[in-house]
Image (cartoon, rainbow, N blue to C red; front, side, top):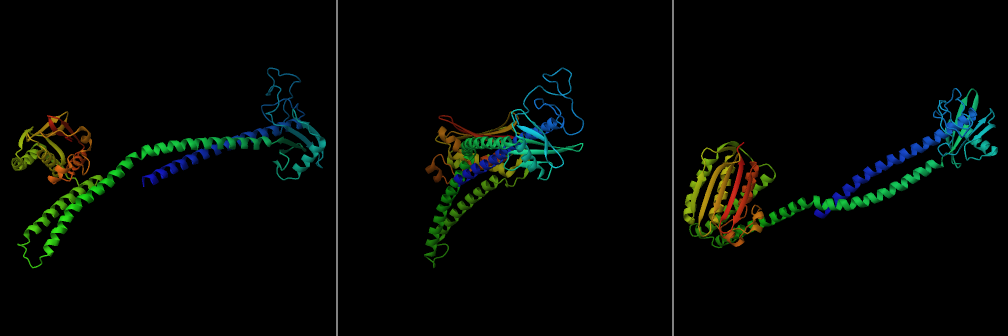
Length: 433
């Protein structure tokens, strides 16, 4: 699934980038085409001036002729300061052009050619015939590589022709350059997309692996009590004539395992709702000092049975806004965990105070230190620092994961420190709100 998602991510990125690049290159190509086409049009307008007003083709005017009054004539050799708008002697835009004047019968009566252009009268007449045979004032002559422009002025008819091969050449060049750039850009972005997909999907891959492991662990934990229940049920069913009292031991085992299963399912449901942010919260003003004190009182018999000494240092009057049931469960989880792993010294110390504007709950036990490499995993679901001993104590490895979920749901943080000879301390900080 992750591989399929990675391929889809790369394909989507490549598709979007391709669309953007194609749009950019299309705009660039069209812009280049329009610029070259405008140069051809300008060359035709200039050619019309040559023939209509007998202007020297070697001179270019700032305002191309569009009909009307005759523009001022340029001097013979060089510009004079203050003359009407014109430019120095030059070839016009490098576009070969020529113009003709035709009479009413379509016969060429005047021919003017631009710099570097050699056109015979027969060729000019042939081009004029082709242009006059077509409708419209402007167009192209198929197979000739020429564009034409027809104008009328004071009863006179003029035709201007310009080489439009440069337009196609510019478009071809632009398309070739765009194709090369597109190929290089897509290849580069493909490599970048692969890297980004690997980095971006890493959290998803980790979450997927965690979910897969979670399902496998949950199935494994449920399998054991189910096997016990089925085995004891078979024993009961093998003695159908016995009384309930006679089968009480097996029925008791069934109930015990069913209760363990119910507790596990409730824990799983709590975590699932927490992940989906659908965990019901009933915020209220909670006296945290009284809540922790109450949990300590209820744990005194458990600690006494385990031979663990409970000490406390609770600052009175500490309150916050939160879910009382969840906060009580948090305290119970930390106390239960501390009592279970109190070690040979069998001491648990609980501290509640205010630190840097937040409420701080610390639960310390004197048990053996947890290896540093295992500390980051303590809040993972179904994780046990000591697999065999945890199973003996009936734990599923969900308590600390639930504790973390509760703390995060209240906007707080939970951390753990463990050092050899000093024991282990869980610290919870919660906002007072």
